[in-house]
Length: 492
Image (cartoon, rainbow, N blue to C red; front, side, top):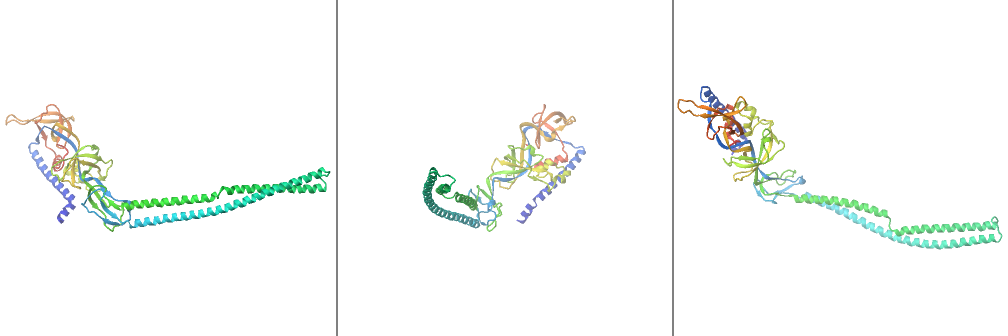
């Protein structure tokens, strides 16, 4: 058990050492082969022109993940105590199954406190309304009494006004009769009578003003209670209504949080992580991961050099150790618009293996590359189910960027470049007798789709099954060929 754990822990180191060993072996082999070539041995091998499907692809590595994956959490329950955990890693759950329970004691206490505030405000409002009603009753009683007193005073004032009018008429008649009898306005009697007349006229005016004042007072009393008191009560009611609404909203929020204290499975799946235990104070993070194994997909990362060639809808070929040599079909469903990972700070395989003949494309297939290379997340659907697949398994990915069916192809290294920049292949013409040498016929070609091992060629004089000359490759290319055989290749 300890040995297995040690190997897993140092897996990357072992892989790197294996790659170095392979490169060193190939390097020594190529040195011996190049030495043989220098001693006059043949410097070419024989290939065959055949019709086949040729594929151009981008190689990458990935991991099987659940497409229906959920993080169970609720930040509104921050600071509450975990009461119970009902699941463990590996448990199967259905939608609505209880996963974790959060203690509701403190939330219920908050709710009770707020409900007490609401009750207190409603009680104060009721008492204020009762006091207001009593005040209205007292005001109405007083108003009725004031109306009655004012009515009586108005009746007395009207009676006194009538009496004052009579007295004024009598004084006016006495003054006029005296003048008609020969008296003059300037004599003493006339002046006395006029003074009495003026006093009676002033009394009439005062009595009339008093009636107007009493009449106006009676009208106001008949209008009812003062509107100032009503306005103050309305303002108070609006304030208490708003306070009750604010507190009631808080109660509704707490009710939602109490309901959420029973954290349930959002979908069917398998519990892959449990991050809390009873007694913990919930910090607002993920308590459980529910991942649906029925629908799995591949999460892969493509180097910035290759990602412009990858688009949604492209076919992918997937291989895993668990499925042995089976190639599983997939489809690219998502290409990240910006890089999510970078090799910065990691192991720079390209600089360490530069002299060993390993190109950047090979490192990309191996999951390496430059330490500063940006990598883009690519999601790939699994178009064929397999009972052998499990979450977290590593996947070798070939994303098909182009393909041609039933086209004429030759081995990649059979195509040579002429001095004018054109391309050609050399047909091998076998000698008719043992004493003759092999001859070659130069055939111009146009290159089509380039796969990892084969390349599409077009041109006159190419026939299926003919033998073509393959130039012996350099140590760099040979290393790539060997590494291609170690992993998932991009061509057929």
